[in-house]
Each structure stands twice: as C-alpha cells, then as structure tokens.
Length: 127
Picture 1 (cartoon, rainbow, N blue to C red):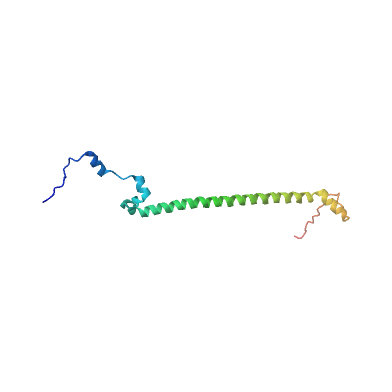
Picture 2: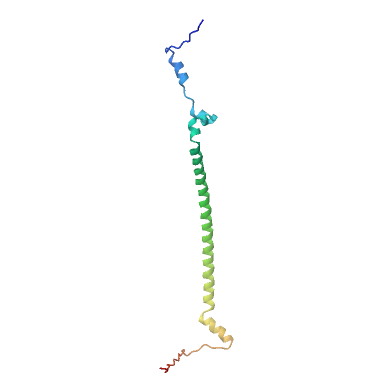
C-alpha cells in the first residue's frame, strides 16, 4: 500500500503564513544566529577594517587631547617666563637709574661731571 501525501494547493492561508514567517531580526542578533549567515562571513574583512578605523578614530581623539594639554602647559610656562623677564628687567632699570648710580659713585668718592664731554679729533696730515 502506498500512502498518498496531501500536496494539494488548497491548504488554508494561515498554515501557509506560518511556514513563510521570517524570524525576528532582534532575536537573531541576541542569539548570534545572524553571524552564521553568508553575508556576514563574506564581509568579515570589511567589518574588521571598519572596526580598525573606529579604534584609530578614538585613539586620535585621545592623542589630540594629550597634545592640547601639553600646549596649554607650555603656554602657561611661557607666560610665567615672560612675567619673570619683565620683573627682572624692571628691577634692572630701577637699579641703573642715573640718580642711583650717582649715589653709588658718591660712596666711592667719585662725582658726576657737570661739564659736557668733549671729543678731540686729530686730522692726519699723512698724504
């Protein structure tokens, strides 16, 4: 006896929909089923390259932050050195004023000349 299978196309619509039902994409991602598909397997080099570029992008952000911090620290040090230079220059100008120099010369017994300086020039007659 041969059994015949019911292969007629008169199946109810509800049973057809149950057979064609697509799996939920969120469920596939959660259980890792989407990784076994040929699309993902064929594109693994591109995926790894994209991840590598993402890592480089994040690393670049940290590197730029580090450089900005170093620039800021160097600028603060330059500003401090400029302020120290101005302070020393001002102290030097105060100490080398004419009146202070005259007072220091008086302590040694020297006096400032009141006469203007004269320049003596000798013309050579060797011709």
